Amino acid sequence: MNDFSIANLLDENKRESLQSFSENLPLRKDTPGTKREIVSRIAFLIGVDDRYFGINQLDAANPQFYRSVYEEMNQDKEARIVRNLCHLRTKLQKNFKPILIEMTSDIKNLNSIPDLVPQETLKALEDDGIQFVRARRRLDEYIVDVHNYLLPHVPNCQKFFPDWIKWPYIKNLFFIIKGNTTEGNKDAAKIYNEYRDWFPYQSFINWDPDTNDGNILRDDAKFLPILYERNNDRFYDMSKVTEAGDAALTDPEEFFANSERVIIAIDCENADPCKVIGILKDLEEKEMLNKVAKILLVDDEHTSPQWKALRRNDSLPLEYYLTDRVKEEKSAVDVALAIKCFREIVESRVTGKMIDSAVIISSDCDFWPLIELTPEVNFLVMLEYDNCSQAYYQRLQNNDIPFFYIDEFFRAGNVELKTEIVLQEVIRDLEENHLSKLNLFSVINRALMKMEVKMNEGEVMQFYEKYISGMSVGFTKTGNAELQNKPALKK
Image (cartoon, rainbow, N blue to C red; front, top):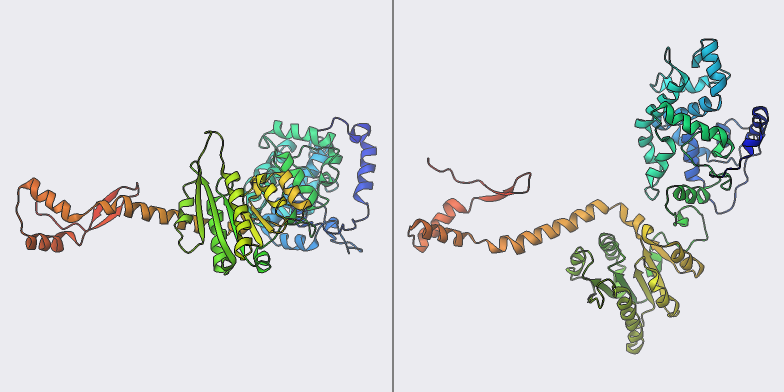
């Protein structure tokens, strides 16, 4: 947080004048290519005034935020409650001193101070089942009440945000540190009142203001990188927040449609096996794998065993290569994969079956030289959002290399695919390592020898058919195996 603030130079009257001036600025002119879907939803929930959505405006042709978002969220009870609680909290903090005077000197409550406390907000909360005003309640207790009321309702608003946004970063905006205590709210109020002009539309939220940020709710492309930065993270996927100018693809189908023969190179160290398997399954279902000459799977002994599930797929034109480590701390996967991929491309020229396109499934920037030094090949990079560096993202952007985030694509089938992979491995392990070693006739013979009982072959078969074949193996809640349908034994 910067130490300098214009607010420090103003007395309260001048501050109010500045506030009035800033709130009545003309509505924004849209910037081409920007999106305001996310900031519109944030603005609604934190209680930004209706007029910035074009509500009750004579000239509402191009408001700061999307009116359609306002109308959608205003139909939802949970979103309305959060919006009204945040709006009320902002008013209580901005007008704290005059409200406190009215409550202590004139023995008034919030519902009898219409010039300082928005009565329509109290009424809206009451209509939605929250009786906010109570007798003999102190003002600082009311502010704590807002925090406590928000706790169960904010999580119910996650549905208004896409899965590719980290929801905890959004949720944190609504909850002041130690907001369930008077002291926590006092600390937050001190920062708010000193730097109020740098909070988004002067809305009281959990925020570390910086004069260099400007209007953080200008558009999605500005807001999300700042939000992630405040959470010691980085937002990379600008394709989600801009209309144009990004090399990111929403679907690899077009790339495959424009290709003749494709090679897919998979870096097992820098790709999630579940996501890769999901991608390949989808390509197979859409018959895009028909153009794939080879799938190179280069692995290291320290990577995930889940790659075995992919290797067992006999329908794929897959070549598996396990690298050795010369030094224990240094992997050779990226070098091996780049060399093998380049060799396949060169050899395809000799055979006359030219590979014109290559897909690299890795978030590692070490493959950039392969892309740069093979300009005759069209490349598509499939990477994971959280594992791609800003530098690599920018390099792909600047050189118009299409890339595809497999996170968003894979998310919908994540649980189903993981279930399938794990179930296959469990069944394989049971059959190969446990059931294959169990032969019930051997068990019967061991019992005969142990008990010194003799049976001929016919008697053993009859015994098996009558008493053993009907039994089955089940599993307890703790995972232990147990015999079921056991024949009744005489006591």
